[in-house]
Length: 136
Image 1 (cartoon, rainbow, N blue to C red):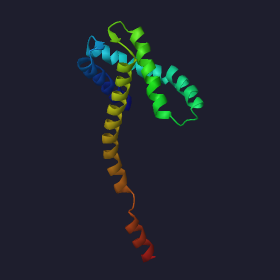
Image 2: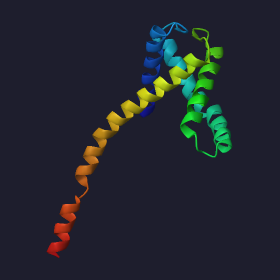
Image 3: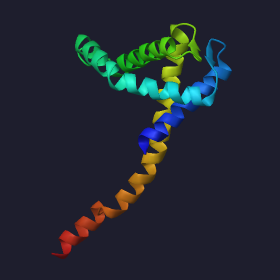
Image 4: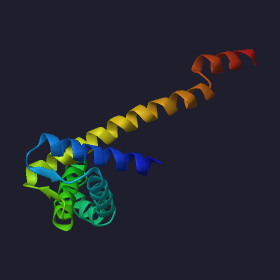
């Protein structure tokens, strides 16, 4: 379920940035959905290997920056593979990578905070634990 939500968010961000940035061109939402799927697939395969190599070079200190750069490179690779998707330059691809990461993180935070409230109610509170121990 999370994969589908992330895919739809990524496609929405790509379409939104195609309207905002003059250097990003997408023919339709279906093209953006296909592009988001390919970016996710390439990030999971080639990007994982490339990110691992780059993180070894940086001693895992710049993990988030390396992740953004790898995603940017995967966006440029998808730009070469998909005919109806065009990103003119490295900076617009980096903006897409940052906007997508922020949107997915925001939705994950919103969806995760709802689930934590349910889990938190099942766990005993520290006051309840102290009261139970005092009764023994």
